[in-house]
Image 1 (cartoon, rainbow, N blue to C red):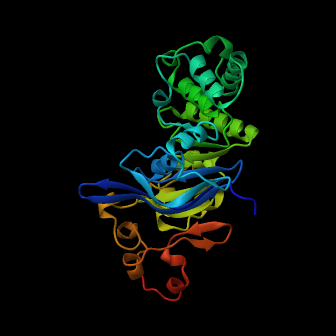
Image 2 (image 1 turned 60 degrees about the horizontal axis):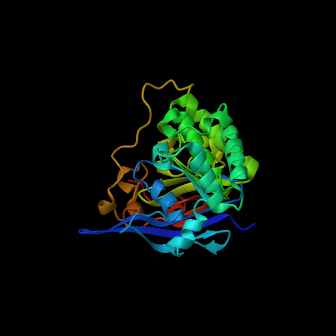
Image 3 (image 1 turned 135 degrees about the vertical axis):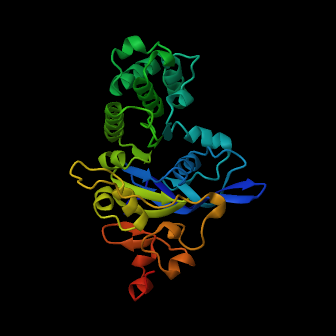
Length: 331
């Protein structure tokens, strides 16, 4: 097996508070191969954005990585000094945030922001950096890129601003792009265009993508594999087609059942009862057990570890362990 581009092992992220330490990520492990799109999905608060922030070294203090390791092409990056991490961020790992206005400085033109990023990370002249910036804007679908490059961010619509942010994230030709809810604030037709642009450009450059979203439709259209997070833990990971068509974890089944389809005749969508637990009240055993339709005694006392499943999947559920199969009583 080729070495993964990104390898995350037993990642733990904690936030100390006056009332005790909150564990936002609890032993999360996954890999991303070169050129692969990994979708990361789950309800708000599942830990998706925290995972992305941990990978690029942007956990806000007093939050910290309290365990595990993150490797980029085999090199450990979670314990680097801030200056060394800054060199990796932008150069080797690009970031696309949900709100383009958090990534773009309103006081500088698009040209100034993209060329500065290019020149910070690549040794090219001012003129070459500008030509590269124009080519990038052209690639992400900004009409009349040569004329519009000297505009300010507020001169662009929301969808066009997000294209500029993608160009900015790709400016230094990173190996990995982390896209955190890149289409949430956009209307559906623009969403599809933005996703297509990201896929196309990353494929042409051989970059891997970690796509963080709560929208399973976007994942189904875009990702090669999908990782499902619940309460800071990995519930299921596998090829996107397998997970969408035949989810194995009861939580993933609930997520899939809540997506409307064109052929659906039922009056109501499936819904998962209850709400995801707060970080200071995660249940013992499986975090999903109070909401799970297939819960049994072991789920309430023992945390399930990810079990290897056919087709390269992993599912953290006692239903798939040998002991459960041997005759657990549901109830």
